[in-house]
Length: 254
Length: 377
Image 1 (cartoon, rainbow over the protein chains, first blue to last red):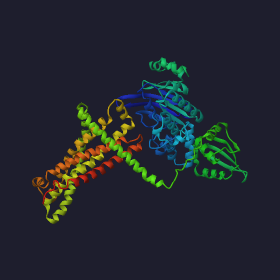
Image 2 (image 1 turned 135 degrees about the horizontal axis):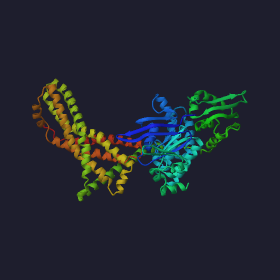
Image 3 (image 1 turned 30 degrees about the horizontal axis):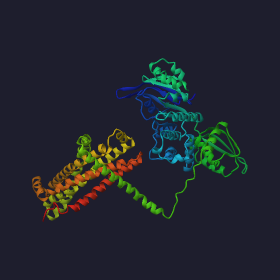
């Protein structure tokens, strides 16, 4: 029995006087696709930032691949951080680098491949996210919103992560682009056997990814399960989120 | 503890009819752990083109491992290859990667150096044209607020006056005072040798009031407020705030640039006065400790050796420098393109250009006013 990829136990977070999370527990097993949903301000992005080690939890413990996030020296932390990739909400591409250099950056930092190998790897990653070689020379400012997300995904995949974290992967994309991005993530997930955790508001994305859903409300994980299981839970937030007319329409089409 | 992933390659059989057996984890981590010995084995394997490859022993294969093998195979699948079906897909993907279109080398003609020479000149021309347009726009804004005084952006002017004027007072006071002390100390050392102690007031008075005060203040303000203005406008451009203003029918030049220019045109002469006063006080303190010159005496002599015209010249310089620094800062702020490199480059250019412009203008004014305010011997 291997340790869960993400293991959050009894996590509490406080900003000033406000408790964002209280006694939050979440386990994500290898190969799972888990979507975190919750109302605005429920602390989804905060939780994601804690999982990737950008924020320290006030209380509680987060383990990735069975190892604690902090402590044990710079090299251990660095090695752990190389096992997951993150797609930030707005891409967070380095604006001074072109597309190629953005994707090549983590590989160069690794310092164990020559330029020719890096070139081939970057081109493979770009083709994985359905970009063409000529796009490699563009600057981030010249890209459309959908392309920024694709390049950011290619960069997140550069170091062959076992765990992929996506923050609002389809926000700001038109339905068509959003569909094709979700298809891409799903295909890559199947191909590479990733564990995926995403934060989203978008029911279409949830339905299309056929993910398990973790509902974050009232400062903890209210329910975790497939969409059908979640919809069976009787709770005001879940009723509003999944059972409104708009949501029904979105879920029925899939 | 999990076993350390490792990529291995074994070459078996007699030379000429060898076979290569791959096993272990052909992943990023596996490649890193295998290191040099694997590279040597791969290089060895590449010397034989018709090698038979057995990849059935590969437990884990990711794209880094696949690309490494692909490169060893010379960008094509080897004829004799045994591999697991689930690994076939990644090689299919590699084969489907569109080849980079040949990077056409730029034509190196005999006229290349002319082009290289001309490009910065063309850039300079657009910079100058943009600057002229900015100047013209400001003139139009000035005309507009003269006709419609209700449109005068009082709030913005006041805010900028506070930010770039009042907030700059501590640092200009400190620097001015210290420069005064140092200047006075060095001059006192020399003057004492000739017994010309009293001339320290002439040197400090003329030097600080007429030259050092205005230039020192302008350099400090260019570094402090000029860079801030460039960065602010630059980021506003990147985050499309300037466009948002325009869509609300608010003129960007009237609300963003005009108040900055007006504020610095007002604040700078006052700051010049303040800095010069601090420098003279610094010089006076130093003269008292070095030459035993009383403050009373200093104050009596100062107005006699520094004619009042010098103060007006200094105020004029402050006014001009203020406008120049603000204009340069705004100009470069509007040139920022949406990336971090451009922001840093334009902020640097803004400060360097502003300081250079200040010194150039100072030289022109020095020549133009060479007959004014100099005490007759």
